[in-house]
Image (cartoon, rainbow, N blue to C red; front, side, top):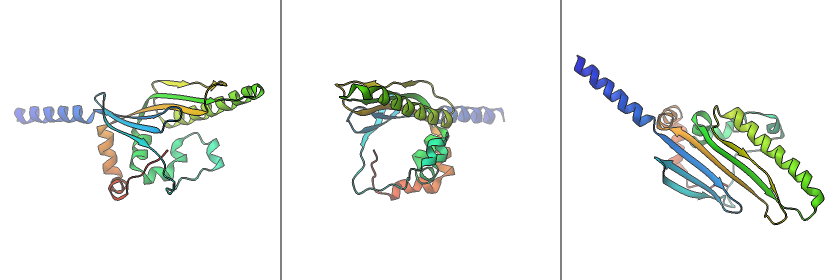
Length: 191
């Protein structure tokens, strides 16, 4: 009997070690480069792709003015969360490891720079509010604005999200129909 109990404990320990492994998803957008998605396991990139929106592609997401007054991305992305497995997984079980947001604008008119600076900090604070209210933990957050005459207009950001294999399996069981939609759809790209 003791032998079976020890085997049971060893199996539980091995399952705990395997299911506790963290997958890291990285969304990176720099200057005018396309959005880059990297999936990492054990600090090695196992999947990497650029995400682009095609011209004939449509999205079910509709922006509403009331979203500016919401504080939780779960409310805003409720419909998208029910249709997309990965959005559900990240919003429900993901922890943010790193967030960097840097909007960059240029203006030849120096009198517009203060207004652009205030508008950029408002955008950064709205993004910060959404992330703080949606995710339980954010380990490292960095927000900055860049207003220069030489720079090109762009939005630079990096978002690193960790999800354990246990959360992945739990989400597959909980949202199995949404998970099956991944295999029925043709490849989609978003920007």
